[in-house]
Amino acid sequence: MAEAINNEAARHTSLEATSFYKAQCRVALRNCGVIDPESIDEYIAMDGYAALGKALTEMTPEQVIQEVIDSGLRGRGGGGFPTGKKWSFTAANKADQKYVVCNADEGDPGAFMDRSVLEGDPHCIIEAMELCGYATGATEGYVYVRAEYPIAVKRLTKAIEDAKAYGLLGKDIFGTGFNFDLHIRLGAGAFVCGEETALMTSIEGNRGEPRPRPPYPAVKGLFAKPTTENNVETFANVPQIILRGASFFNSMGTERSKGTKVFALGGKINNTGLVEVPMGTTLRQIVEDVGGGVPNGKKFKAAQTGGPSGGCIPASMIDIEIDYDNLVSQGAMMGSGGLIVMDEDTCMVDIAKFFLNFTVDESCGKCTPCRVGTRRLYEILEKITSGNGTLEDLDRMEELCKYIKDNSLCGLGQTAPNPVLSTYTRFKDEYIAHVVEKRCPAGVCKALMRITIDPDKCRGCTACARVCPVGAISGTVKQPHEIDQTKCIKCGACMEKCRFGAISKK
Amino acid sequence: MKSLAELAEIKARTIDSVIMPSGSGRMRVVVGMATCGIAAGASPVLDELVKDVKEAGISDRVMVSQTGCIGVCQYEPVVEVHEADKEKVTYVKMTAEKAREVFEKHIQGGEVIYDYTINAANA
Ligand SMILES: Cc1cc2nc3c(=O)[nH]c(=O)nc-3n(C[C@H](O)[C@H](O)[C@H](O)COP(=O)(O)O)c2cc1C
Ligand code: SF4
Ligand code: SF4
Image (tube, rainbow over all chains, first blue to last red; front, side, top):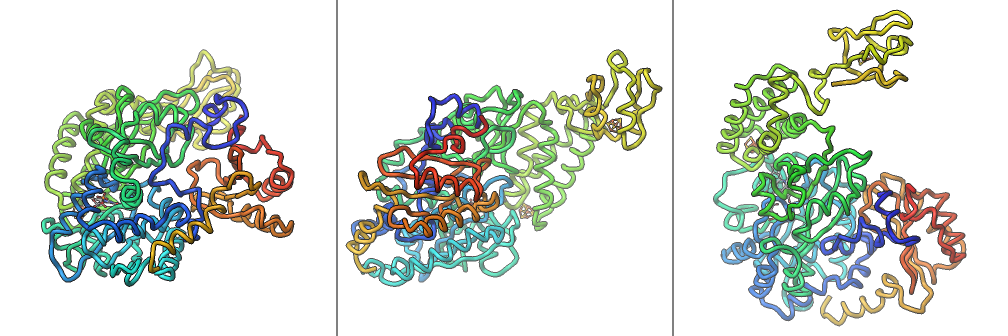
């Protein structure tokens, strides 16, 4: 952030004056960092519960749904399904009991926007779930939060108590006869529990495994009743849409992706943090302006969106306008909003292996294509990064990816090969280099790395030989030293020690 | 709650403590207390400011509050000073000691400690 900020006109003192902030636009995060999340009065001061009041006293449930449809809001939990449409499906089903579920499982490694909303503005989720309940005819809601988020749970628990004490949750709200009750359920942090059907199975008290769809939750969801399930950030936009109207929201964004998106910016970037930008902001704006660029003068190589289900956008596509459809057309996806920036020192095969390792661990094991398939895929990647891969392995890898995608039961398995396919499509030359030349162009894969001493630069000071933990360096004083490649463990200690820059890795 | 009037009444009595009214000379000091802030050490910073304001007996003019994630992870703990009619001041990488200094020089003395602001950070 240093550079970005120093470029600003002299002596501003606020966060808003930094380029990190300037391109941002806060809707879902509007109260985060502003109000005291444990004060219901402060939430109300910022027009909290006014949208609920407006809906209950002035609007029919159909009008609420229409407003959400017109706003163009799409699900922020990954898939981007139109929220208003989802609500209308549940509303259309008659039942003695319906439910609203908020997905706060947030399993994507590196993502933390949902946690931030719950910790910084818990009442807005309560208000939004009530709006959804009113619109769809549900009177009970569940928030499914991962147990690793104790502060979010604490603040949400207090918010629910305070809302009940004010009569903003419970029976006959605003004297309109509308009732709504809200519960919290803790998830044990399995990634698959973020998948909507597994999440509901888990709330019901069973082992969190996905179930086949159809039936969809709108027909047969929680406790076999019609259920609307949305992500935290999706809900966080709803009160503003109802209060300020659909046009407030759909005036931001692109043709088919309206509003804003929160990203957790991380990786090789100067300004890490939580950013909310209008849909359609270019990757370049996010990386260069908001993110302040890549540190240490390194080159931007690619950005990974969508975490373990997503893909990468290469530097050549840096001017892409980020929205649901553009990302999908590039073989990536919005996902929940993790955005990991990678520089020239990142090995794309290694990245694919990292995400696959995650899915192998998180596969629930219910179906074979995912349980066994992802493991076999991981083994192929391991073979490639250890220098034992063949061109046939690359073909088998592609075939296996397709098989896993087509045959897995739930989204976890269906999307698990994405990081592999996307890096393979975009950076085929890197895979080929590993396989054919037995070389890792980024110098990451240890098995393919060679640490060598340049005899012209080496002065024979013996510093490297003394620091090598495995005695791989031989040579006499004032004579060029040499590394025994069969002993070297590529720890890099000698490189750091050499004062003449004679040792390098390739 | 039985009516919108009740809601409006709560808003009316609270709004001035969230958005400082012009000419009031009041201050609102917030400390980022989301998981990220707390992990970086925001709790002692908040405690210090609460204690200082209480001891000085100026709670009617200065309100200290926790808040959620401000968004700038690597600069936590973050303290922001909102004052009526002035640009907000964002202090970063705070400690209890720095907070004490901000209290004395800025909150009481009215002088911004530029070196601790986000705009001076990592210069
Ligand atoms: C393996 C897997 C994990 C998921 N994890 C999450 C999650 O952590 N949070 C979330 O909101 N949605 C997650 N989803 C997406 C949900 O199934 C669901 O589509 C989403 O919560 C719907 O809400 P939305 O329409 O508001 O986006 C996950 C899906 C899959 C397949
Ligand atoms: S695809 Fe994977 S996570 Fe999903 S049901 Fe099958 S084994 Fe479980
Ligand atoms: S990289 Fe480590 S193991 Fe290899 S020669 Fe240098 S010090 Fe020895």
